[in-house]
Image (cartoon, rainbow, N blue to C red; front, side):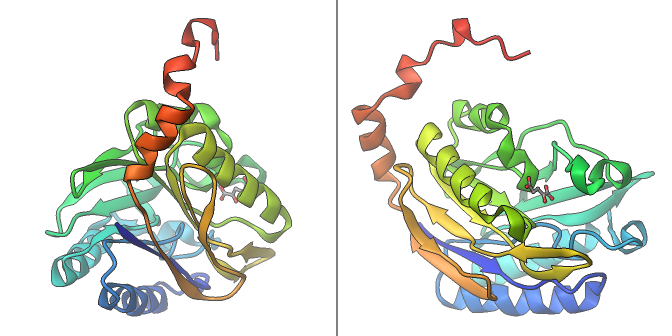
Length: 261
Ligand SMILES: O=C(O)CCC(=O)C(=O)O
């Protein structure tokens, strides 16, 4: 399973330019025969301009058509990062997942809104997990700040996801949190984590890049730096079973003792 993560400096508020750049990067990754291409958070508007409600996609119409068309053309799966997405009176931070036939297999609205950045004042939160299958393998996607909520990610593992995608717009001052939390989620859940960040700036935010492809032992198979790039790695899905046989946390856990409310 060859996975490519696209990390680029999203142009804040410039939706047309962002669709163009995204298309170029998807074409570049697809020509290198990726099985899954992954985008970062809020790639249509960046995170997030003042007029994000006006710039947001209209119920994902443009984004779904755009991703489906490229997925079908290249016969590639796409985890479409996320876009600002207006539905009714609300704006959501939505990830669309598209299979090789161009079918939308899942849509995920970010569940934990980043209150330190006042995301909750502009966006509405989702309340459903996204667990889906691509090429017959179960996978899940969460978005940026969701990464800090280990209970939420654990639910994806318990639903038998073998790969977790984490599209993000993670700012520079917390690069270490980004690296440590992504590796921790991979180790504790014994699955692959594909963490895709943007780079560049939006207002006072500097995004730290360092997209990562991490195996279920916590080893970093590929990591970017702070610049635009595509990072790629081969995920050998057979290692999951070997690791789970060696240290079987799913057998040994004691949910009867965990009162998480
Ligand atoms: O949790 C963090 O430090 C960053 C989260 C964030 O920037 C976001 O969810 O947009």
